[in-house]
Length: 295
Image 1 (cartoon, rainbow, N blue to C red):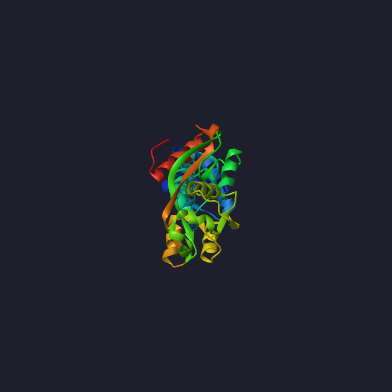
Image 2 (cartoon, rainbow, N blue to C red; image 1 turned 120 degrees about the vertical axis):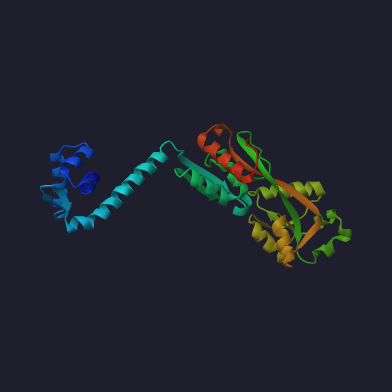
């Protein structure tokens, strides 16, 4: 069964006359008759009754007509959708993500991309921030999110925001800080951060600023796990302010009140991809979600 046969079937049914249907279809009458006959043979039943005044649908033809209309309508929808897609942006976008989806505003960003660019293949890959940066540098990722300062000249960055971090410690440990001096933090054990996390560099920067060199008693690269270790009395650590305050409100740990460290959240991509249509689209949509001026 072919679409053109169904179109002929519907047109003949609407006109009630083979000659008039042939004129509308820009076919000869024998061609219309042949198509109707072929369709009747395929469905195994007569669809029209012939008379001197023209043709009319049999009961079987009446039953099949609505389905024929539906099929032709679906075919038109496919064609119209294909015309809309023609010329639209297509390709693959491999994006490295870290931290939490709400922090990165991943949901609204990807939702906008999917709605506006249905042919764009978006692939999100989670990893620690240093891994994301290195994979972007090696072009194994097309772009990604990175926390901290970018040291590579072949990686371009757009600063999205600054995330505040706070020093957290087990409940009661604040009493171990003589006079509350930040330098006393160097005498307490710390939960170390994996070198594959940019939070390690941020923590090292903080230690230099405080002029301390504490002992690391454990190492971790998962932010929630770090909070759990602190709450369990393992040691002191650096944590995102939002999470730190929430855990403090729950009575699980203590936030040092006088120290706050800011870290840059960057969107990174290969510098030589500037001007690439897919990348420029990613950037434009991302900046809109973050309500930042165009790069």
